[in-house]
Length: 158
Figure 1 (cartoon, rainbow, N blue to C red):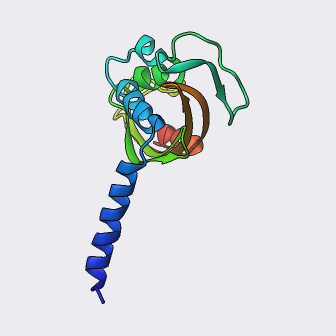
Figure 2: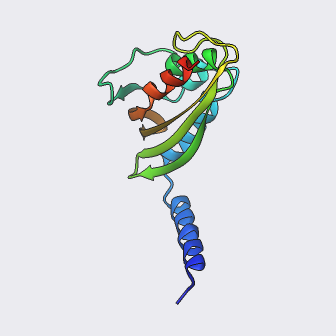
């Protein structure tokens, strides 16, 4: 019988190996997507190259207008230039999806989501989870949840 410590290491090694073996195009695409989304200066045109014309946000039940993928990522970069995703997990789901759990961290130095920056600037850290669908190297769908109320509370804290 293996000691518990060795069993935990074996399970961790097996999980790491399994993720590497079963990685899909969505995991690779989303890894590259977040590198660009978090790069500064932000480049919405470059981020747009990942988005399919058929993209659909299933959470909000909308097909966003086509154009640069700036949107929310541009607002985040403008209001909190040091902000970025700390990817806690990225796992393949089936053949065409990637599940991502992240923490978004930064400092409201330039007014984020209409909340003016304070002195000293408010730092924030919120969790989120997304399921991205990728077909032929393009993002076609998104299901997501993030702690927007927690973000607003942190931005408005005195």
